[in-house]
Structure formats: structure tokens, C-alpha cells
Length: 202
Image 1: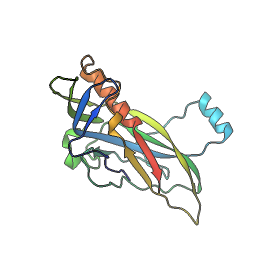
Image 2: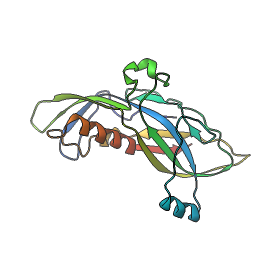
Image 3: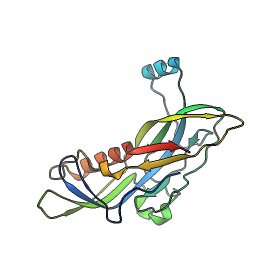
């Protein structure tokens, strides 16, 4: 399940470059979530030599391929989907972000996200200056893999809940608002948002 952002009613943040940023709205599209089995020493070595290729669009027992639009304004946890992996040990989660198609879950509440991976509106200011409003969006795709606390599934213990949480306080780091154009801001925001994901096992 995806948990709501831990921010206030009018969230604002100070970035690592000294800007104050106000977050007004944000939407993103998760296109895939994949539970990754723990790799043996041989598999880790092989993966370093031959990177894994991922097929998109088809769900499997360990891969959820159901594009879902999420929003920073959510106030309750959202169940993204259910996987039924075989017994084994699992140590990672892969998330893929990409453009929402016309049947993405959550699109009814955010129809403007068709064809978009990420959209954010807010305002920034340097110390002592006035806020400057901005909106960025992108249709870029992005994959990230996270390490999990080992999850072992057996016939007698075959269920676990993965709780996805994002920390918006670091989304704006590394962005030079006075210099970077909208494309640069959008790409950095997408990357920072993806990297802010933390997963706990319940």
C-alpha cells in the first residue's frame, strides 16, 4: 500500500541550496512494482556483467503492471495492488515510473495526467525575495530498485504487506531555481521523488 505524504496542510521546505519551496500539488504515475528475489553470490556477479531486462505491460506473480496515478494530497493509504509470489526469500523492490495511459487507476481524479509521469505545482523564493510560482511536468520513464528487509514467504507464512512512503522534504534538493529551466527541474524532481521512496514490511 502507498501511504500519504507526511507533510502539513501547506507544506514548505528549505532546500540544500537555500531556497524556500512551497508544494501546492504533485501527481505521479507508478507503472510497475516488482518484488525481487534475494540474489545468490553468482546471480549478483552475473547481474553486474549482464544487466537485467524488464518486460513491460504484463503482470506476473512478482510483477504488478497496473499504472496507478498517485497524488501528494492523499490523506489515506491506497492499496496499489496484490502480488502472489511463490515461496522464497525476497530482498528488493523495483518501481517504474512512466506516462499514465487512458485506463490508469486514479486517472478519474486527475485526467490531466494522461501521458504524464509526473506533474508538480508550487512556488519558490530565495531568502528575502517574493515567491515565484511554477509548474513542471514530464513524460519521462524511470526505474529504481530498493533494498528491503528480507521477506521470506512459505506455505505457512505466505502474506506480507509492503508499505510505500515518500519523503517530500528532499524532492527539491539540487535544483537551482534561479537558473534551471523547466525541463531540468522536471527531471530532477522526478528523480528525487523516486529516490525518496522508502518501503517497510508489515
